[in-house]
Length: 187
Ligand SMILES: C[S@@+](CC[C@H](N)C(=O)[O-])C[C@H]1O[C@@H](n2cnc3c(N)ncnc32)[C@H](O)[C@@H]1O
Image (cartoon, rainbow, N blue to C red; front, side):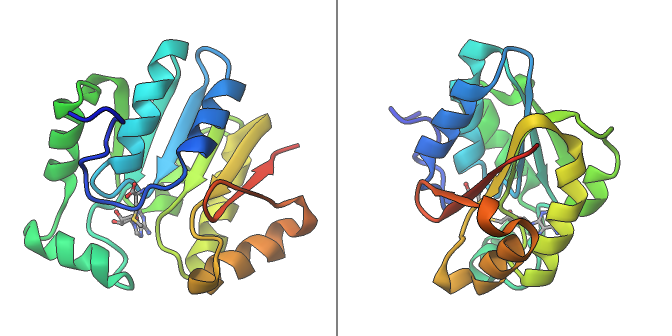
């Protein structure tokens, strides 16, 4: 356990201020979704700070990578093809396992199972290719309620697919927050 929840878990989490802001804007009982949780670094942080407001947290990942991120694929191989157990162990270690609903499956396919307007915030951090980001946004956007937010990681030069997809869909409505995160308020 670390002073900042999740800090000892490998991953790519440099957007704590975005999660702080999203929790601040949420109302008790709201549900937040992180798509692309890897080993739980950012999810553990979100679930930990969300507890005080009694927010529901949903974690979505196929737990085997998309094949185009060698850093993720290497860790998946080291865990015998799935990082689901490693993820759940990290949640248990931080005492948040019972407060997170986990969906092990494809991002867009999982979104189809929810009713429109279900969520206050969806954070997209899965497959960073242009095609996948467009598909993920198309799948998750209707699931967000009016006044909620959608955002994601790696709106950056080294992830041109993310930036291109997000700009095409949202244009000037995109706000840049935290380190390389994009955020859009859903009307
Ligand atoms: C960059 S990592 C996420 C990093 C994480 N948020 C953190 O705190 O370190 C991307 C994750 O997305 C998952 N992923 C990739 N493509 C996916 C897809 N199509 N559906 C569901 N999960 C996917 C991978 O398995 C991986 O765990």
